Image 1 (cartoon, rainbow, N blue to C red):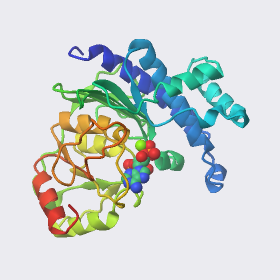
Image 2 (image 1 turned 60 degrees about the horizontal axis):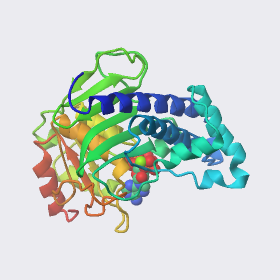
Image 3 (image 1 turned 45 degrees about the horizontal axis):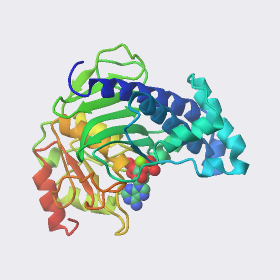
Length: 330
Ligand SMILES: Nc1ncnc2c1ncn2[C@@H]1O[C@H](COP(=O)(O)OS(=O)(=O)O)[C@@H](OP(=O)(O)O)[C@H]1O
Ligand SMILES: [Mg+2]
């Protein structure tokens, strides 16, 4: 594939693939026992290792680019956390990355940028933590933002079933470069050619497929049910974790993804959206906040000038915004 950001795309895809491998290895070690005890350590090992993998690759290829990532190594550096850091080291070793504890913390902290700059990456090393723990959907999300706009986005979705033409193991990636469309890649077969993706053409709201968070604390299920009733949507919402929701809208399996605020004091984080937004936009869809404004990635770690996120195939967008207004959500 040739085009702008060709090198960035190749580096991002390879880094996300390697991070996905680490996450899959850790996820395989999560036992029901761990879940019952509500032990967060498996997810945390994977979060740190995934961030280390991606930030290390970015540091090598683009040493001047800052990274706004979700994690930092402060907790890992506590003296009593040495065994834990060692687990991160072990997981990295499984994908051929050897580092001292200092090096590993250094890679993780490459993601410690918080201020806005003209060119930076943003990374969610495991988006959909709860889905990861349940053995369901999660994503590794990486985006490059230039002059406030996502220019490149990669989503790794290790548990998302592939659509045609691959029908092997679940697991696919999505990529988008501004102005060049969006594509999906097989996770299992890194030599397989990418396939362009496109949003649906659904224009009748009544037949729309809606998707939303599994967690009712992340998006109001009550408000989406009210919207569905007003629009005569009879199908049940598809609930899945992480930016896999952006991916299913981008490939036309769902027609909308709604993120309706549950609290006044929560600002969305840029790493939860930047990559997914570009994948949907480049697949022909529309993304705004509840007021119909574009998402504003110029305020550091948070989308503090936006409220809610509304993602549609395009034709349905105005009906969704108007109806949310009519029921007092927008
Ligand atoms: N109150 C509130 N409102 C909105 N969003 C919130 C809230 N609290 C957390 N988060 C962020 O939601 C991210 C996970 O999003 P999802 O809803 O797609 O996944 S999940 O179904 O909850 O697993 C999750 O990302 P991860 O921490 O990477 O999983 C959080 O950044
Ligand atoms: Mg997240």
